[in-house]
Length: 315
Image (cartoon, rainbow, N blue to C red; front, side):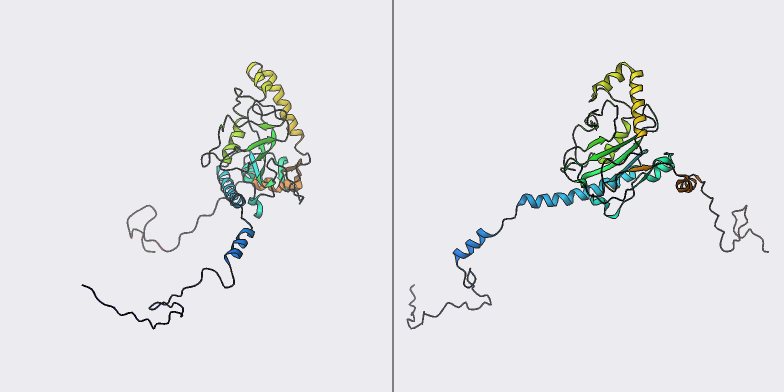
């Protein structure tokens, strides 16, 4: 079936198109006065944001939060005989945290002549391998038993920029340490025997500190980086003990040396001063006073030696 439709040829087609039945407007794809060429030119001139720079900035904040978590875990471990504090430029030190083992070391018998203090210097100096002191922690190890008993060994922990995703921290001693796992020339400790590879969420900085302490009690010479120390330990224990004795004596003689690094948090020591340190020492070793028992409140109808209710006679 065919239907005839009459077309009105009198409609004025010169008027612009107007959409009927909708509130939407048809807008031009380009702003007024803009041409496709000018828009393209602006896009070319726009400074490009490097994805690498954004990622680096994000990684820096991520690392700071990781280090804060690592330091909190380190505090909870209470590793005996070790004193550790981040450098003054570290993000952890914005509120000047107290080094985590100060109280433990004092109570457990560390000599009060080795009382740490903080220097007042405000000089900022880049000292670690990554070129920023924000990734540097200072530490002191007090060896209390074994062949190295009496040793006071300063050390620095250098945290790599790739932490915690990869890269094992570096530990370097500030004085000569005669040990199979310590390089005699650089003072750096070999951590490969304890950490062949660094795995995130598996390995932590507190484990590095604890490993550092344990190697002075249980000596391992199979993977020695100081071959002389390893050979003497295996073949001539008496000569090894003599070298260790000299090493311990040197560490004690250098306790009061000026700091090798100009940082407010570098750990330094003062000789024992009785007017200054005596009251603190007495307060630590003074027995704790027994707290008074809280007096019972209210009236009881139970006799002292009975569990029967109302067994107490009326008075």
